[in-house]
Length: 373
Image (tube, one colour):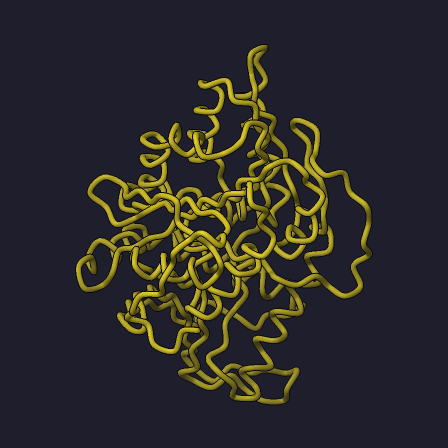
């Protein structure tokens, strides 16, 4: 699935406080989530400034899509049969959870980056319960509503007399999470499911991966889910994943535009003024791109100008990387792939990685992506 994008910066006015390392079972820690509205507004203003100044293709913040209503729509989208990423990751957990657990220490703390709907990760947690391996699961997300619902559901599944998995939430951004995880002293398993960390253009994706890799201790592990379907072989399958429920996607985006208007305090995005479009790119890597295009000149009062007819604004793209490129990205981020698994009859894969050590004999391989570093 496309990454549920999390903002990577804290508002400078947000006070810093001392938090407990992990919440109690069923509880959620506010590690910065209560300051997010200011971040969204700033990112939206940056988008409008980019339009007014004719900078690079502007991008609307994905966070506008994930309010309470948007989350309900999104959960419907990822449940359709054609949205293979959700079903593939569930299949991978059902097949390989026992092996994943064999590579982590007892009493590991899992941090699920951009957790969203936790239905699929509960297939992994169930294996911890089955094997009686004590562990803590922490869902990191920007949506308090999503965390409330997900953690309540997980607590129902992990509160019996023999339960060994403790579940809690961290409400905040990736940046908040990076600051907070240093307090967790137990071995850690970072979960990047649904193509979360790698769902960007190569330099950006590598930067995100390096940020998390730099926090890993020798005993830590990371599980990376990544869609490896490419245009050359899987054009129809990729397209169907995003276009078998166009009515739901329309509702999803219209809700996001309404949220943008609320943040701005006036109506800039009228549905009739904008066309929602999509395309599937092949180079430099496979990317499915949703974007909106102005159907007329739209007044932009803050800058005493207009958004010109034909102006495109990116929104909600999904990058795909094959196994060779994911391994290369991991190597350049200072990580070594321990094992990878492909879902049955699919090119969606999970990669279990650890910090690179001196004994690793890793060599970069040629990549089809130009301009990497």
